[in-house]
Image 1: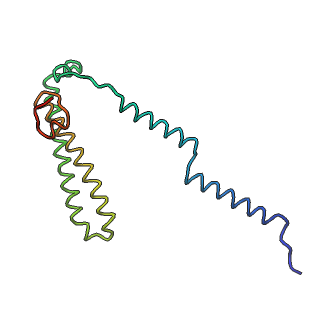
Image 2: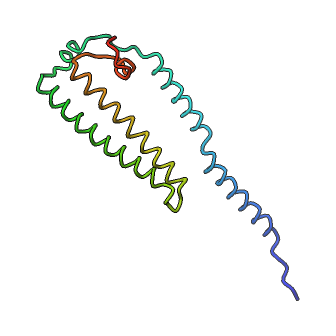
Image 3: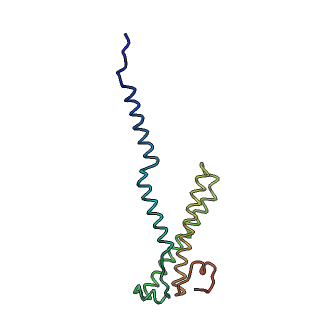
Length: 153
């Protein structure tokens, strides 16, 4: 005589599958309320950045406001110079690894990672060199003016 399955076993399996499915959807999509809240906070942050008012002051006024001495500026300039050398070496290594990407077992991911590190280190290199130039020339200038080496403030 064959045993009859218990009544409702299929229903229990169905409920379990639905429960697991809901948990899977929640882990993939996340909490929609929290996602909505985070996107509103991000939009507010971008709005704040667009509408931010910046100070309009000279280098000397900035130094006076921050209470920096010539020794502090010299120390900061040396530190940023050393940091830019470090970023330059990281950039050179990333470019070397990028050139070696075809020899890798997974060249596409190797190249993507090398491009990412290269772009990140170049951006940090430019930022530190920009700060060094501001301290060396003792004037505040826009990044565009520095990059194009123009004399406008």
